[in-house]
Length: 115
Image (cartoon, rainbow, N blue to C red):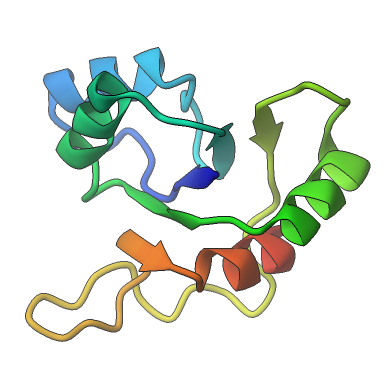
């Protein structure tokens, strides 16, 4: 199960990236989409917008907590708050400290801070 959270807004974002984000239903900043079994097309879309979103492998406990606080059963789209404690930085080029891109298991901590 993959969680995708939009981090960047619409300022200085390419038109193609905006269209892809709209197709992924990530229209606003701090919105989240959860894909259970992504197809190859969805993974290609994710690869093209990796500089604007944070994504990673979400565990079942975090998903249950997300549905309990922010959604209804069966929903795959969620609106979240900005993260408590803030974002240290969105991207450090060459240094893997930014929040954008693949966060692997750290996405669970980020989503919990945004509930």
